[in-house]
Length: 368
Ligand SMILES: *Cc1c(COP(=O)(O)O)cnc(C)c1O
Image (cartoon, rainbow, N blue to C red; front, side, top):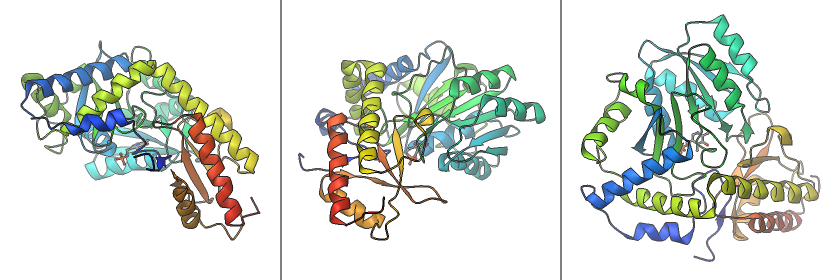
């Protein structure tokens, strides 16, 4: 495995050998030991978000978007109305989910380098009291911008509205305390900052809201009320569980805790981000976001202006040196992205910068 490339992407990302090894066992979904694994996983996840008092952890098969769609479909009543806050592609996806599910919604969009503010949200909720819910992306992975979650959550709660947070790319690395940040649902997944493998999401759902959500869902498989009730009764997942993914995440959480939990994970990613930003700046590559709103999760860089630069060629050459980068997701400016998350440290990031430097020299890209 030593010559497998390092994934500097927003997920799937590089996992440890221990985490991959945990998938070498086949578990039966009825087996008591597997049910204990699931229960232990949910308890540990609740501890990370400090959610034991007011929230349940409901796991769901599938990629992260499945869990986001399930949360909206389950927790927003059919006559609810969602204010969707957008500054990138994942915010757009929230709006699309509301549209497909037939939930009424309104959008508020800021530029991709402009966080939504609590003042904006207060103004919008005053202007239209018919909103029942607000949906927000914590770290908008399409650029790496961080939205001010704690402030927005206070304003939403102050208006008596309910908050749905897509914290997919921040959970486990950036602090979120359910006792201080009121929310109805916070959604994350196995294959991001917890460094598990992809294949399941999980929703921290407010206990009272989940209890009141029976019959809201448009879908059988995506109904979190049903998923949770069944799990509570039987200890089992409702339908075939992603057993290997659960086992890998359980092992990844053991390492998370050994590393020093959230504070240590946050520090390592922040160190990765800094090593990356410093190294790329030395090459003359500029980051798209100012440091003040940059989350230490993924960084967007302006592509070189040189006509000899083509992303595909650049990508293939950097890959040949052992690193997988990610294309940009902006419509107006040409960019590429480099993730800071996964089983990698600052030395790995510096090696990636060296690979980028060598590749740009090989491509004779001069105009950066
Ligand atoms: C990764 C991610 C998702 C989920 O994407 P999937 O491709 O469905 O796993 C959702 N929201 C954000 C902010 C993400 O970073």
